[in-house]
Image 1 (tube, rainbow, N blue to C red):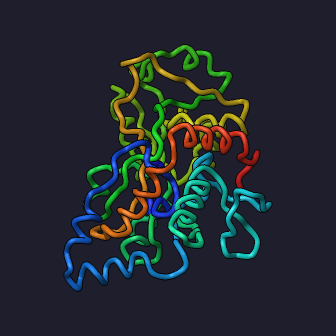
Image 2: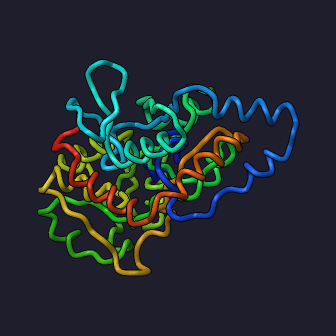
Length: 292
C-alpha cells in the first residue's frame, strides 16, 4: 500500500490516525482571516459528500465485491461494492464530518494525481506518509501500523525455516509497484529483486506459479492473502533481523488543505486504538475468498 504502500485521500473521511496528536494547522488557519484561507476552508468542507480514493484491490484494507452488506459502499457502477478496513474507516470519518461517503476506485499510481487534481478529497488506502509523498500531499497521524513479513509457498521447506531477511540471499523476492514494500527488498544482500507488480492478486499468482520465491507484505495484508490462499504461508522474522521499514499508514489530503486535514484528524482522534484493531480483525475475517 503498497502500501508500502502508503496514505490516502480516502483517509479524509475515514480511517482514524493510529493514536497521533491532532494537527495544529487548523487553529492557525482559523486565526488567519485572509480570503485565501476562507476560500480554502469552504472548498474543503462545503458540499454533502466526502470523496475518498482507494484501489479496492488491497485486502484487508480495501477490496471489491458484488454483494452488499452493512460495511460496504457502492462504487457507482451499479454492480460492485467496496469493503474493507479503509472503507469502514472512511465511513466513520465521513459520518463524523456529517458527509455522505463516495468511494472512487482508483489504481494505486493514480491516487496522488487524483488528489492533486481535485478528483478526490482524500486518500484512505493503506498509504505510508513517506518523504516523497509529503512533497505533494499532507497526511494525518497514522491510523494503523503493523509488521513487515514475507509470504511464501507453503511447501517451500527452505524458506519456511528462515528467521532473518539475509537468509533470502539469492532468492527471487517481489513487492508491489511504487510502494515501500518494493524498495525494502534491496535490504537483502544478493537478492534477486523481481519486477514489482500492480496488485497483490497478480503477485500471488506469480508466487503460486513459481515465478518468484517470496512476496513482501505487511502483516494484515499477508493474513488476508493466507485466509484465501491456504497453500501459502507467512514468515515473520526474529526481532531486529527483519526489514527496516515504516509500516504505518495515514490519510492524505491535497497539499496545503489544512482545513480538511484538521477536520479529518479531529475525527480520527476520536477513534480508540482498540476499535481500530478490532476493525482490522473483522476485515481480515470478512474478506471474500476471491476478489472481483
